[in-house]
Image (cartoon, rainbow, N blue to C red; front, side, top):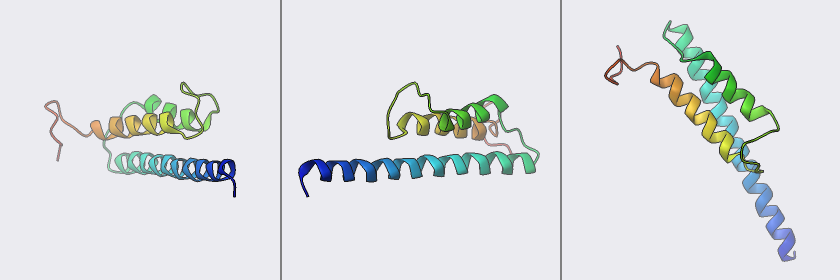
Length: 95
């Protein structure tokens, strides 16, 4: 194989790996929100959850890239926001 082919294969493998990471974080976000709702706990602002999901699936990005790095960042912020709603006024976990 020539150098160009090797670079394309490596880039494709990296893109697939990062997409898998983005999907994994999305699944964690959805599961966390579902578990919080089932427990009757606050899930954080609804728009943060849906905004993160839409940002992942819509083709427009703030940072155009083929490797979903900004998408992962948005999903992680939404997951942190959902988990942050479990904290009391002093930042302690309730319960």
